Image (tube, rainbow, N blue to C red; front, side, top):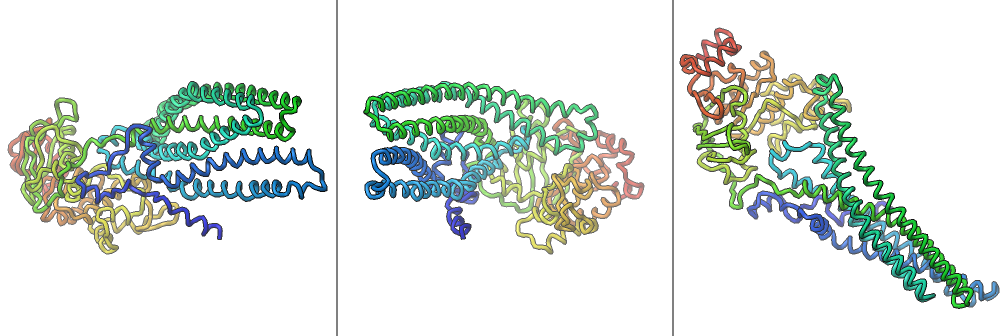
Length: 632
């Protein structure tokens, strides 16, 4: 029953809200992407505070009421002591019944309701929905970043930033509105109550408040900076550990001297040193607060005793004063811990905001329209791209591929073949020239529609850590079971899929493939990737070493299906194993980002140029004599 009651509050905040703008609305507004999050820390915090303004306002109210109830209870205890001192047991209930009843209601009813309301707001309404809202929006913005952005950072570090910014922002806001405000309310009421008992008590608390504020203003900024350094160091070691785990095979094969441990240890050492610098600052602050609180308790206690001796303060007043300052001492130490956490969280937010609020560098133009993919003609028009280095890679490259033409790109490693494919996919922005598909400049169309029109099978096939079925279905949203099974059969993957079984007992198409598909062999991963592209059925097909991970028998088994897959499509194929592309309609030989030869296989062999040299180095491209004759 209690669960059902609490569940009513859990949907107040949508944990997957997107700032009021869905991807479809973003495209309709010609933005192409969700709006970037504020890059300044305070504006970033305010951005999310506005997203949950009413629950947070409720938290502010309950925080103030909590401090008020605490102060009222101590005041009531003082009145009760005076009543006990002046009254007699026989007349206590008759003379002070309403006071006793009021204290019972205040302690049992009012206090319980306030604390319960605060707990519901914090635990059911705000957490975890509000925290997840921050993480979700941060994740969505990172996913809008360019391919280069992810190449230049650790995946683990980016994931850590998403996790940290949600936790730190949520904690900062809730602590400020509930804990900090409750503490401030208690201080103000304590000064008022003690000042009414004796003005000098109010003066002592006033001076103490100024001293406390001085500590917050002058000593805590250092903790904030140390917190930012610690958060950054934390994400660094996390990124290095994740990178090591992700590439565990390479570590096992090549790291005989355990040099990778030294690299990871360096990250840990930086984190430990950053933590030590922060804890030094924390100790300084805690010592200062302990001294300040001691002076406050002695000062208020001395004034209370002197007033009692002079008859200006009752015994109940002394109890109220001592109770309030003892509680204030306890709360101030606890609050300083929370302020330290506030400052550390603020530093964490500062550190994460630079990542999750970064403006995407490769975005759709405001007037971008969906690509209208028809026949699949591709034109590279004087394309120039240097990876920002000012020279090299691709210079003034021009190539026209007719609709339905099968073109093989050939050249030494580093000649620029894969770069051209990445530029066609608009994973990078051109530095010069343009690329057209069916006469449409790809820089002027939406990235999603561009990539929807191109199917890609790469050499370095990485699968999602999901089921075989999910990985194949990733090629086309809404694909039914029959489509998935047909694609697997065409890719000659249906023979091994039924034999798969993961550690959790899932088998066949339900079996999970491990991170990046590590549980499958290279050939098996490649066949799943081919099945995914077969299911996508895009008009333009890119095969970047598509069969490089397959043995000759399996390659021959799916070659016919690949040929079927290429029918009616514009195909760009890259292969170092020249036998796989020798039968293409046209071979384009690239060297240092320029076309040096082009033509059919037989013509290029006869020409005796770079292609012929590459072919001869492969002893006929691994073809048998009959296949070689057919290709020529």
